Length: 170
Image (cartoon, rainbow, N blue to C red):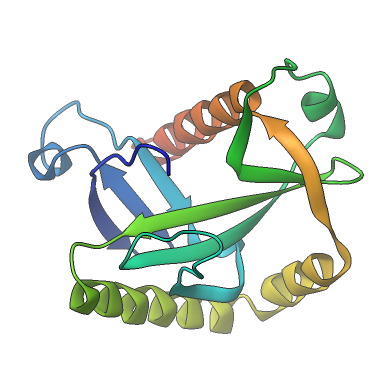
């Protein structure tokens, strides 16, 4: 099992945002260290992580689909280290990102599952065509291609910087 990083999470509309420490949420100049865009989560939405994916108790599992430029992945730095959370489709046009979020207790996990799935339900009602399109793509794709850990890190940095820009006031 890999190293886990403890984070402070906040569910805000269509985003699950996380910081390193609870006090960072309100600190001036401290940006979140990451976020999960719930608009890209596909079935089965948020569930307790299957044992074959994560043996750690109280872990939530979600999958996101992300459209990418195939050239970006194919030209990515090749290394022996591959990401355990990202896999590419055989045409390198889509990434499957796995999200693993561990709660301290079973009851906390259950509460988070209810809240996240309620948010996903509301988002799906507002964007039914979008979620139907994601489901169609997901049913046809096989995510078997490994993505290097370096490319995965760059993708995360790119996503975080674009989210920070869009969150800035005009």
